[in-house]
Image (cartoon, rainbow, N blue to C red):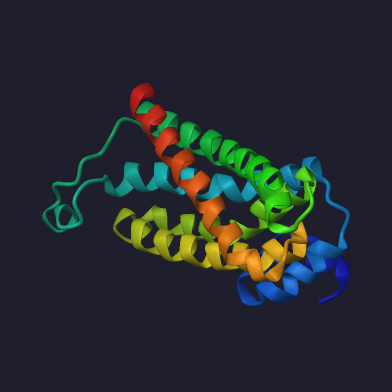
Length: 199
């Protein structure tokens, strides 16, 4: 696989799944361009989960896993599914942006350097496994467990990418990651609360 192929969405996504440490060395060597990354990588991948979830809810419905066996799964209206998908998508993009700001702002505390563009690239690439797991939302019973696995792998990718992208001290990477997770956890709770209020 040559450099041009690795830089495409499928090539880079596959590399992040298969060999994240090698993929980070490639990403770190490239000039960080948040706008280009948003348009060509983050925005398309972030759309997978919301789109597949909306389709899955219309085909299979939602609810308690056992309900699928009895045919009693609940199916929301099309408008409600589309609104939910649009909100999930918007919140995914917002989360990447806010997490990038937090990672950049926290970097000096852990021996790193402030760089919002590189932080955006870090978050956008680290979330690859989580976003690709969104394909399984087509069948809601599988959606949640596979998404959890994708999220855990994305955390691993984030851990590997922090010292390479933000130039933090390797000895402080775990503490840096823990601080990022606290910010991320608070952000997810706030966004979920906002989604409940809106819906």
